[in-house]
Image (tube, rainbow, N blue to C red; front, top):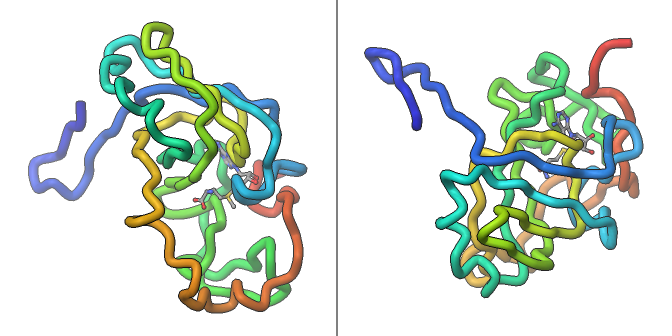
Amino acid sequence: MISYNSDMTKFTVSPIGYVKSPYKEQSGTPIQPSFGEPVEAEIRVSSEFREGLVDLDLFDRIWLISWLDRSRPYKLKVIPYRDTKERGLFACRAPSRPNPIGISSVRLLSVDVKKGILRVSGIDLLDRTPILDIKPYSPKFDSFPDEPAGWLDESIDQETADNRFGSED
Ligand SMILES: C[S@@+](CC[C@H](N)C(=O)[O-])C[C@H]1O[C@@H](n2cnc3c(N)ncnc32)[C@H](O)[C@@H]1O
Protein backbone atom coordinates (compact mmCIF):
# COMPACT_ATOMS: atom_id res chain seq x y z
CA MET A 1 0.00 0.00 0.00
CA ILE A 2 2.87 2.42 0.74
CA SER A 3 5.47 2.79 -2.01
CA TYR A 4 8.90 4.27 -1.28
CA ASN A 5 11.57 5.72 -3.53
CA SER A 6 14.96 4.02 -3.45
CA ASP A 7 16.40 5.87 -0.41
CA MET A 8 13.06 5.99 1.51
CA THR A 9 12.97 9.80 1.56
CA LYS A 10 9.67 9.96 -0.31
CA PHE A 11 6.67 7.70 -0.18
CA THR A 12 3.15 7.51 -1.50
CA VAL A 13 0.22 6.80 0.81
CA SER A 14 -3.32 5.99 -0.29
CA PRO A 15 -6.54 6.84 1.57
CA ILE A 16 -8.51 4.07 3.26
CA GLY A 17 -11.68 6.13 2.91
CA TYR A 18 -13.26 9.57 2.74
CA VAL A 19 -15.27 11.90 4.95
CA LYS A 20 -18.88 12.72 4.13
CA SER A 21 -19.31 15.98 6.00
CA PRO A 22 -21.76 18.89 5.84
CA TYR A 23 -18.81 21.33 5.64
CA LYS A 24 -17.85 22.31 2.09
CA GLU A 25 -15.36 25.13 2.71
CA GLN A 26 -12.94 26.11 5.44
CA SER A 27 -14.79 29.25 6.42
CA GLY A 28 -17.36 28.35 9.09
CA THR A 29 -15.98 24.85 9.77
CA PRO A 30 -15.15 24.10 13.43
CA ILE A 31 -11.42 24.45 14.07
CA GLN A 32 -11.37 21.32 16.26
CA PRO A 33 -13.85 18.44 16.73
CA SER A 34 -14.75 19.60 20.25
CA PHE A 35 -16.29 22.75 18.73
CA GLY A 36 -18.25 20.73 16.18
CA GLU A 37 -20.71 18.87 18.43
CA PRO A 38 -23.44 17.79 17.77
CA VAL A 39 -23.05 17.95 13.97
CA GLU A 40 -22.80 14.46 12.44
CA ALA A 41 -20.68 13.14 9.58
CA GLU A 42 -19.77 9.80 8.05
CA ILE A 43 -16.51 8.10 7.27
CA ARG A 44 -16.87 5.87 4.21
CA VAL A 45 -14.23 3.13 4.32
CA SER A 46 -13.19 1.31 1.13
CA SER A 47 -14.27 -2.33 0.86
CA GLU A 48 -10.73 -3.74 1.07
CA PHE A 49 -10.27 -2.29 4.60
CA ARG A 50 -13.69 -2.96 6.15
CA GLU A 51 -12.71 -6.14 8.01
CA GLY A 52 -10.34 -3.94 10.03
CA LEU A 53 -13.35 -2.08 11.50
CA VAL A 54 -14.33 -5.08 13.64
CA ASP A 55 -14.32 -4.16 17.38
CA LEU A 56 -14.06 -0.43 16.69
CA ASP A 57 -17.63 -0.10 18.01
CA LEU A 58 -16.25 -0.87 21.49
CA PHE A 59 -14.81 2.64 21.56
CA ASP A 60 -16.60 5.93 22.21
CA ARG A 61 -14.04 8.06 20.43
CA ILE A 62 -11.64 7.49 17.54
CA TRP A 63 -8.75 9.34 15.94
CA LEU A 64 -9.13 10.23 12.28
CA ILE A 65 -5.78 10.74 10.55
CA SER A 66 -6.57 12.77 7.47
CA TRP A 67 -4.95 14.46 4.50
CA LEU A 68 -6.05 18.11 4.47
CA ASP A 69 -6.15 18.18 0.71
CA ARG A 70 -7.53 21.70 0.19
CA SER A 71 -4.94 23.59 2.23
CA ARG A 72 -3.04 26.53 0.84
CA PRO A 73 0.77 26.12 0.52
CA TYR A 74 2.29 26.31 4.00
CA LYS A 75 4.23 29.12 5.69
CA LEU A 76 6.55 28.41 8.62
CA LYS A 77 5.14 31.37 10.59
CA VAL A 78 1.35 31.75 10.81
CA ILE A 79 -1.24 33.64 12.78
CA PRO A 80 -3.30 30.74 14.16
CA TYR A 81 -7.07 30.88 14.51
CA ARG A 82 -6.89 31.31 18.29
CA ASP A 83 -4.24 34.02 18.42
CA THR A 84 -3.51 37.47 17.02
CA LYS A 85 0.29 37.13 16.74
CA GLU A 86 2.53 35.00 14.56
CA ARG A 87 3.57 31.58 15.84
CA GLY A 88 5.83 28.87 14.47
CA LEU A 89 3.82 26.48 12.30
CA PHE A 90 4.78 23.43 14.35
CA ALA A 91 3.45 25.13 17.50
CA CYS A 92 0.05 25.40 15.78
CA ARG A 93 -2.68 23.10 14.47
CA ALA A 94 -3.05 25.08 11.21
CA PRO A 95 -4.16 22.90 8.26
CA SER A 96 -1.49 24.22 5.81
CA ARG A 97 1.63 22.17 6.54
CA PRO A 98 4.55 20.60 4.61
CA ASN A 99 2.62 17.31 4.92
CA PRO A 100 -0.99 18.44 5.52
CA ILE A 101 -1.91 15.68 7.97
CA GLY A 102 -4.82 16.26 10.35
CA ILE A 103 -5.56 14.49 13.62
CA SER A 104 -9.17 14.66 14.79
CA SER A 105 -10.56 12.89 17.83
CA VAL A 106 -14.28 12.44 17.10
CA ARG A 107 -17.19 10.80 18.90
CA LEU A 108 -18.06 7.42 17.34
CA LEU A 109 -21.84 6.93 17.07
CA SER A 110 -22.07 3.71 15.06
CA VAL A 111 -20.08 1.30 12.92
CA ASP A 112 -21.45 -0.65 9.95
CA VAL A 113 -18.60 -3.03 9.14
CA LYS A 114 -20.32 -4.53 6.06
CA LYS A 115 -21.06 -1.19 4.44
CA GLY A 116 -17.88 0.46 5.75
CA ILE A 117 -19.75 3.40 7.26
CA LEU A 118 -18.79 5.07 10.55
CA ARG A 119 -21.19 7.67 11.92
CA VAL A 120 -19.33 10.26 13.97
CA SER A 121 -20.06 13.61 15.55
CA GLY A 122 -17.95 16.67 16.20
CA ILE A 123 -16.19 16.71 12.82
CA ASP A 124 -13.73 19.46 11.81
CA LEU A 125 -13.07 18.08 8.32
CA LEU A 126 -14.41 19.15 4.93
CA ASP A 127 -16.55 16.91 2.76
CA ARG A 128 -14.43 14.41 0.74
CA THR A 129 -11.34 14.79 2.98
CA PRO A 130 -9.18 11.66 2.45
CA ILE A 131 -8.75 9.48 5.55
CA LEU A 132 -5.33 7.85 5.87
CA ASP A 133 -5.93 5.92 9.09
CA ILE A 134 -8.35 5.35 11.98
CA LYS A 135 -7.23 4.54 15.54
CA PRO A 136 -9.11 4.06 18.80
CA TYR A 137 -8.93 6.98 21.23
CA SER A 138 -7.85 5.95 24.72
CA PRO A 139 -7.99 8.39 27.66
CA LYS A 140 -5.13 6.40 29.20
CA PHE A 141 -2.86 6.98 26.20
CA ASP A 142 -4.14 10.23 24.76
CA SER A 143 -5.38 12.48 27.56
CA PHE A 144 -3.22 14.70 29.77
CA PRO A 145 -5.75 17.30 30.92
CA ASP A 146 -3.55 18.77 33.65
CA GLU A 147 -0.51 19.48 31.44
CA PRO A 148 0.09 23.09 30.29
CA ALA A 149 -0.52 23.81 26.58
CA GLY A 150 1.76 26.74 25.66
CA TRP A 151 0.14 29.77 24.02
CA LEU A 152 -3.16 27.87 23.71
CA ASP A 153 -3.68 28.25 27.46
CA GLU A 154 -4.24 31.98 26.91
CA SER A 155 -5.78 31.82 23.49
CA ILE A 156 -8.71 33.82 22.14
CA ASP A 157 -12.10 32.19 21.88
CA GLN A 158 -12.45 31.43 18.13
CA GLU A 159 -14.30 28.15 17.42
CA THR A 160 -14.75 28.18 13.62
CA ALA A 161 -12.31 28.74 10.76
CA ASP A 162 -12.09 31.65 8.35
CA ASN A 163 -10.39 31.38 4.96
CA ARG A 164 -6.81 32.23 6.00
CA PHE A 165 -5.52 28.71 5.17
CA GLY A 166 -7.95 28.05 2.31
CA SER A 167 -7.88 28.36 -1.47
CA GLU A 168 -6.80 31.74 -2.87
CA ASP A 169 -9.75 33.87 -4.04
C1 LIG B 1 -7.30 23.75 12.37
S1 LIG B 1 -7.51 22.31 11.35
C2 LIG B 1 -7.36 21.06 12.60
C3 LIG B 1 -7.42 19.68 12.01
C4 LIG B 1 -7.11 18.59 13.03
N1 LIG B 1 -8.08 18.54 14.10
C5 LIG B 1 -5.73 18.78 13.60
O1 LIG B 1 -5.58 19.37 14.66
O2 LIG B 1 -4.76 18.34 12.95
C6 LIG B 1 -9.25 22.28 11.08
C7 LIG B 1 -9.61 23.22 9.97
O3 LIG B 1 -9.01 22.72 8.77
C8 LIG B 1 -9.79 23.03 7.67
N2 LIG B 1 -9.98 21.79 6.89
C9 LIG B 1 -10.76 20.74 7.17
N3 LIG B 1 -10.68 19.81 6.20
C10 LIG B 1 -9.80 20.29 5.29
C11 LIG B 1 -9.29 19.82 4.04
N4 LIG B 1 -9.66 18.64 3.54
N5 LIG B 1 -8.41 20.60 3.36
C12 LIG B 1 -8.03 21.78 3.87
N6 LIG B 1 -8.48 22.30 5.00
C13 LIG B 1 -9.36 21.57 5.72
C14 LIG B 1 -11.12 23.59 8.18
O4 LIG B 1 -11.10 24.99 8.02
C15 LIG B 1 -11.09 23.26 9.68
O5 LIG B 1 -11.73 24.28 10.40
